[in-house]
Length: 219
Image (tube, rainbow, N blue to C red; front, side, top):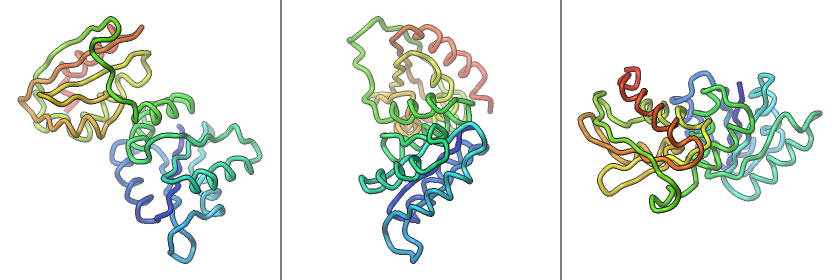
């Protein structure tokens, strides 16, 4: 399973994000690497390198970062690996990208899939007027609606498909690849939401969403 390393200038930021992402991906090794050894703000090459080693389980490691100098530290840590192909630094939004990457890793995605999921988390929801679109509408029958676990399941369901999937509730819409954006819709049990998809796997994406809804998000 792919591991994650969260490189931040702040230890508390990295630790908090690791906790958040870990709630949705309990089997993924998510290692925070934030701050300097003396507790001040900054990035520590040795700490990042050690985190990469601990996150590695044989399938690879994705590193996400908060600011530019953190990226440089992460890239240096990857370059210094005996086999740099073991790890990749991902240009993605720190919070949403980490959550999306964790969900993709939990679903068994490889390093490329996990990286693409992180990048896609920052993408704007596609314009419904472009491309051939298919969709569905359903009522959330589970008690909590689109909160953390159901949102993570939905994102994981469509992550590996070649499709742009948008979920709408009222005036809001979210890219289905973004767990936090799905949670931000504020859809609760009993609410009706719509799903639309474009791309080669659009029909399969809608079918999978319908199946997930029919199962009550496995709750």
